[in-house]
Each structure stands twice: as C-alpha cells, then as structure tokens.
Image 1 (cartoon, rainbow, N blue to C red):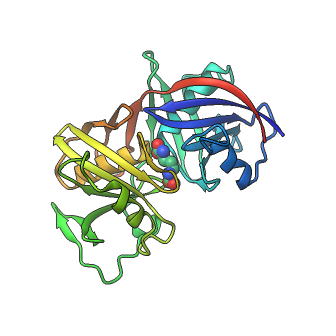
Image 2: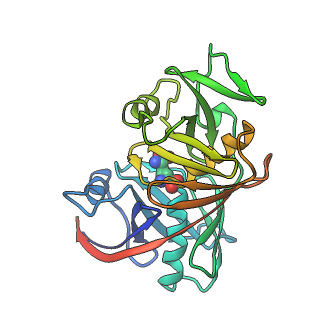
Amino acid sequence: MRLRFTKMHGAGNDFVVIDATQQPFSLSPEQMRRLGDRRFGVGCDQILVIEPATSADADFRYRIFNNTGDEVEHCGNGARCFVRFVVDAGLTAKRDIQVDTMNRRLRLTLQDDGRVTVNMGAPVFEHAALPFDAEGLTPAPVNGFPLWPVEGVSLAVVSMGNPHAVLRVTDVETAPIETLGPLIERHARFPRRVNVGFMQVIARDRIALRVYERDAGETLACGTGACAAVVAGIRAGWLDAAVEVQTRGGLLKIEWAGGDAPVLMTGPAVKVFDGEITL
Ligand SMILES: N[C@@H](CCC[C@H](N)C(=O)O)C(=O)O
C-alpha cells in the first residue's frame, strides 16, 4: 500500500504524521514498525494519525502510536505538530482547535509566533491511573508530596493521560538514563510500563530534563514528560507555577496553577518534509 506522510518534529521529538482524513489508514503493527524504523523505513519516535472527529463538538480525532506499533494515550509534542499540520494542510481555518485522543479532550492554540499552546488537561495522581503498584512501599513525602522508593531512587508518579515516573537528579548529563531508564520503564510496579523523566532543578523557574520514553527509549524531548516533571516539582515545592524546560532538542514552557487546573504547554512544531512510502 502507498501512504502519503509528513515528517515533523517538536523540539526534536520526531513524528511521521498521517492524514487519515484524506486517505484510508489501516496499518498492521508490523507496517508501523517498518515506518518507524530509522534504517528500513522513514524513522520516528511516534506515528501520529489524524482522523475526522467522532464527537460533535470536537474538530478532529488524534491517535498516537509509538514506533513499536503500540497505540498510546497521549503525546504532547505530537499534539503541537498535529495543530501545525491541520492548519498548514488547510484542514481547518481555526487557530483554536479541539481534539479527542484515546482518553482526553485537548484544546490547542496556534500562536502568532508559530508556537503552539496545548491545554493538556489536569494531572492525575491516583495510582490506578498509571497504573502503579505501591503495595508494601513507604513513601518519603517532600512537602506532603509522596516520593516512592523504587530501584534505589525516589519516584514521583503522575499520569498526564499517559504514565510518568519522575526522579530528581543533580546533573542530567551524567544521570544513568541508559541503565535506570529501561529498568524503571519495565519495572513490575508499573504493569503497563512507564515513561521515566530525569529532572535537574536549575532554578525555581527552570529545569533540565531527559526522558526515557516507554517503547521509544530516550527521545530529544517529551511533552507529557515535561508536564509531569514540572507538576511533580511544583507539588514537591521545588518549582514555581511557570517553568522553562530545557530538553536536548529545545525549550518548552510549562504552566500549572495546581489542583484541578489544566497544565499548559507551549513550544515549537516544525515540518521537515513530505513523502510517500510503499509498505
Ligand atoms: N513523546 C511524547 C510521548 C509519547 C508516548 C509515550 N512514549 C508513551 O508511551 O506514553 C510526548 O511528547 O508526550
């Protein structure tokens, strides 16, 4: 089958975007893996699929697959690229767009400077939402916020629609991402696995972050990971309500007023090229 696609990235987190409003989309997990393979296919961290809305008050439906072919709940950097794509492709004349994902309604705004702000919804701390199995563990609360001892480190657990574990490190450049990342990602306490964020607090309004993503491994940026890290940092009393997140691929701005307030994420969305592939 021949498939038209657009290669995009958000702060270096890269995507193959498929417009399923204009062409049929039905790829097997094997075809997805080939598409996502950097040597045998196009290569990307995630595949984003844009579909017509299925509810009356949404503009589109947006589906996300890791480059392993597994469908996942959420992708923050991808959400920004989704907006850039639908506006540039003329699929909508709106600048404020509502989209349904697997488990959330997102509200997104294309700014005049080309960046996109995404209302990511509120963070969820209930363990069932990740899920996280805390049976038999005693948390070490920091300012009342529980940090959980797993594999010798202290983890904050946060769902942004998808699961995140966040740990504070003194230096992201020397943090053991390659060893600890996969160990926590596949730890039995996270039955559906987890994205693992390594956060260095630089100031109350600035962190450096590296994320070992579920399935994709370390990416140059993770939007939901940035939200989870900032939320954890705010709850632990380390950060203010607006924080710049330095990732290896670029800068993201995250804002959260606490409680049930939604997390707002602002950052870049860039088209790289259009292409066609036979799968
Ligand atoms: N890169 C993403 C997150 C993609 C999904 C993640 N790997 C998962 O499995 O939950 C982002 O920008 O949020």
